[in-house]
Amino acid sequence: MVVLLVALLVGWAAGGSLGRLGSLPLQAPRLVVVALLLQLVGAVVGGPVHLIGLAVSALLILAFLARNRGLRGTGLVATGLLLNAVVVGANGAMPVSSGAAARAGLALEDLVVDARHEPADEATRLRLLGDVVPVPLPLRAEVVSPGDVLIAAGLGQLVVAGMLTRRRRALPERVRLDRGSVQP
Image (cartoon, rainbow, N blue to C red):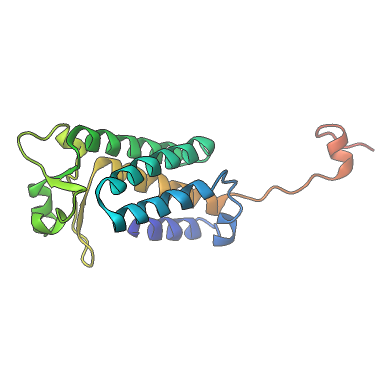
């Protein structure tokens, strides 16, 4: 959330506008809506439905990112999602560092409250890809993964680029006829 607010401020300070965000040429945005709904249903129902919902949701988001790969930021988001999927796949849940939790001012028990997270220990695989980055914000401290950092950076880049994108104007008829040269 903080990254998106900062991105909006940066985009505005650079002369961008919120109205231009609506002109981003996003392909298949419904994939994101369906992915979010699947995650919500999975979280409410729980059990294997939760895991299936997460897996299908991730595939839908990757399909969305692939369809929109020409937009700035989508590569970072895809890479972040891949890193998170790899560490969760290797461990069965996102490992959370107790040291990072302490540096963020949080108790590990407050972060490991559901089946999606587990305390990192000696058996943790790919520990550096887990939740190891402390974010000690005053109102909402948390611990995030390097994948989460890439996702946030990609979303921030997408917002700023979208705010700065100029809308294309239609060329006058006489210019279009000759691929860019003006006819007398």
